[in-house]
Length: 207
Image (cartoon, rainbow, N blue to C red; front, side, top):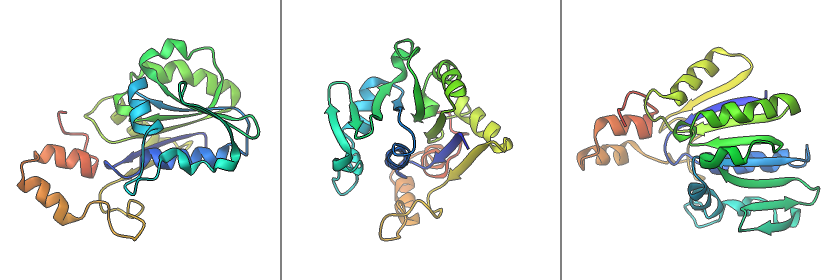
């Protein structure tokens, strides 16, 4: 399909998943791929400068032999076939209108201005591009509404992964967060609403 909503618990590897997905799409179709954060500053901190728990840079998951140019100022990589990957923020979404991305990732979609998707979706509708929405729950806002819509729409992929679910484990197969770790969060003062939001994808927390 062309649209997917993935609501995963905190630290489940959403942005790294998105980078690896884009790396598989680049050989299939030449074009512009956007990795979008709510703000430009977040894009640089979370994705462009992001790293795994063992210190490997997120962007190192693009094979270096396939990258022909890297522009750190504009957070852009150009590949052997002319495809472009770029990290952008939707805090200045009007500057993005008029371009022609063929694949977009809305990272932390529940924190984006929902107007950004409405401005970009006609571009993808016309050029046959795809959109992926990855986020952790943040109240019953537009992220909640989109998840409910996608769950009823057979043309959209929809998935919710909570702490402990298969697919959210570390490389050795152990869970990212064990029950003991989460219980320790409770004991040391994390409100139960936040525990449910951050680890179990609850949209009921008023945060």
